[in-house]
Length: 120
Image (cartoon, rainbow, N blue to C red; front, side):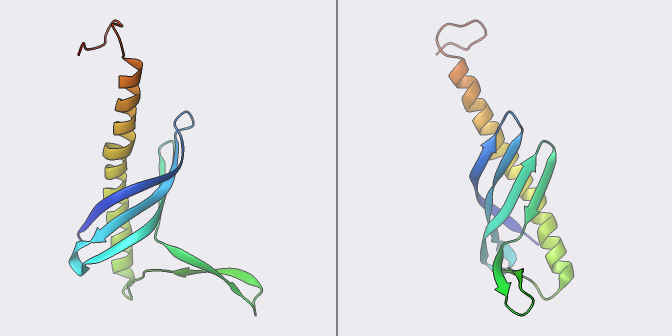
């Protein structure tokens, strides 16, 4: 399955603890579908990706239940989608969120005529 990561939306971040939480917006090219709300959480080197779900309450069972927002009938396709989202999502976040903000912080530290800073 071919996808394009459109954007990552950060909801929580702590660089000292190496923690990041947010959601991905991906475009499923093969079926021309936008999928928003893919849950992402990173703790140090451990990544978790979850497809969007809604929560409800089962009155008979008396408990909270989860319902998938998007799901293929073919479970192999679901597994493949999750795998591709994890691979491309992780790459996108590392290159466009973590590296970009790391570079921005280095530029903020490197102002004026400090040693090791490139002059403008």
